[in-house]
Image 1 (cartoon, rainbow, N blue to C red):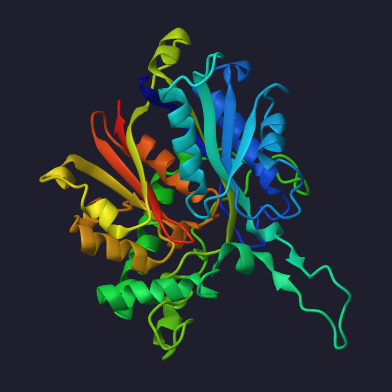
Image 2 (image 1 turned 180 degrees about the horizontal axis):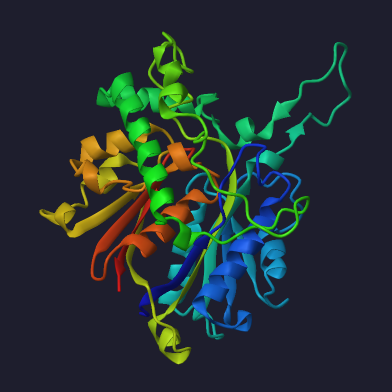
Length: 382
């Protein structure tokens, strides 16, 4: 079995819905991230043997989105491409599949360098109508962000209702969720101002504006946090009379992230210094599947936790159920404040750990996904 290392990890800025990156399709955002990751790794594009990219809302993007992205990044026409849809966990699943291919040599060709990540442009997702003769009274138009990205197909309700169910089961209050969301904004604002996030971001050229990069803001950061949370005074939440609101949930966003993975032998061959190694990876459909695999003292080994903030309650539930130190969780903010391009986020949180762990430390990234289930990756900084 081969040891898998991460040699670079980058992402684009994350644009708000119909905001600074709305003119850039997901495939081009993916190209920017892939090209940036390869350049940061200091290797030739010809070395990349395969590319996996998560992408959830693919309608109207054209055939084979990952193929478009890798060709736009300057990779060779012979580079295989696979697009992954595991809803919010798509970007992380791409990393898992790349790591799996690298760990076990499954073909006669040498699969020793791969790119994995995720991309999404929620601003460019279309509306659809049924392909049938319009009935009397007109036709119904559906938003594919909601239909394909944010609706539980089994219970026919919004993912926010799933968050409400979690809040009830775990007895997490509206006040706790609002307080967590405010801390997410505070942490991401501090991370931006200190330059912590700058090392992982590559610029995006906006066609209408010429060369340059949009300034990444914490979503709604241009509004003071106390003004943002004026909605906390409302009696009703977004779902029923519960606790989940637009303010303590993640936002709709555009962005892409990519990592270069290779075997330890390939890193030596290419004279590349690895940043981190993948220790293990896991996916499960049941909470018990995670909890029953734990061992005594394991939590103390983890220096950093990146738990995707689909909703504030998701992180609070994980902290409560796993009894982990909140001070180690999402230390530089998360999707509530930074944004959640759903095909990208799983890759972003892994890349963020790569840059912010100290040598020898372990970091664990976890993300839940629509349809049920969750994925996680454990890495060690080298």
